[in-house]
Image (cartoon, rainbow, N blue to C red; front, side):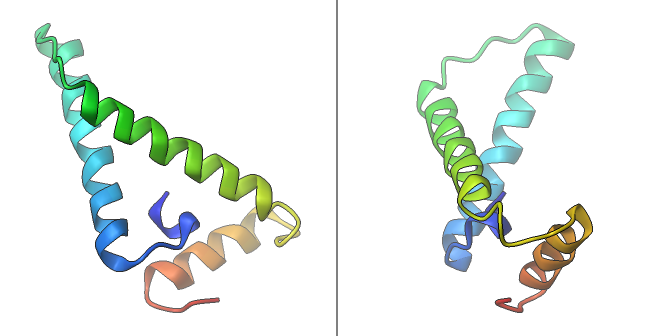
Length: 82
């Protein structure tokens, strides 16, 4: 998600950490029955997801194939800006 949204490295790391934290929260609930009241974490995650999907929509005409999109995300992930 963070590579698609094109954010500063610090913000991208925060977004990745949020996804990881939400996944851990989900796993604790599903595998151990531990409920969480971390509304702030879920709200931050949902905001990041909305930003991701809106970016995908806005960039939908940029790539002709799924592979072009994946290649572009790989280049961003490894430091390129194209």
